[in-house]
Figure (cartoon, rainbow, N blue to C red):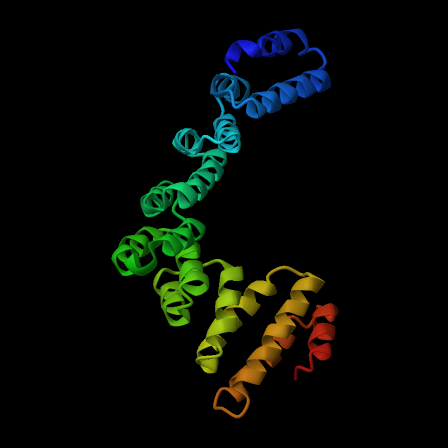
Length: 268
């Protein structure tokens, strides 16, 4: 079936913009008809439109794949990926890699490397790691070097993808990690290896919890302090932790809700 079998699309576009719902329905119908007829020209016309939006190129790739044109779908997905550096292009890039995994698996690693280079993050690094397989040792140095500019991503990648808690701990200190949520996750894992080593980090997190007078923050601080006492119990650090708790009680003696939360947590 040729593109001439769908003369209504351009006419519909101009005649019904006044009624956005009607225009949407007509456009959707034309798109579905183009896919059903496996009409490449019509699919491109109805989905890519004027090609000014990455998401439209992505939609074109999906429609071409549905119609049974994987090679064309891959080409359009790659074009959508390379459109710009926005989130729509990033989503298109994941779809591009998905298509490659099905139809051209030998090209996936190069595509995932390209994705990581365009959007370096713990997420794109994780997907590159999965694609690399046995080749990962050859890829790892450049990935870790690139991630080092983002402390958050470097630590999360080491922790969640490489499952290397010691490397994540070292990176967090060497890179000066400041993200409190990531520190919290890291402490939960590293305390299994070296309970006493996490005490200074927990103390710093507690200080941050108490900067703002907030009942929720008080509860979090109390839980951290309770964890510190448990980790330090029976060691030379036990007295230091209890002294820290007493010092905090004194420093914040005019915060009755804090005192209440400390009491509830069984703190001295």
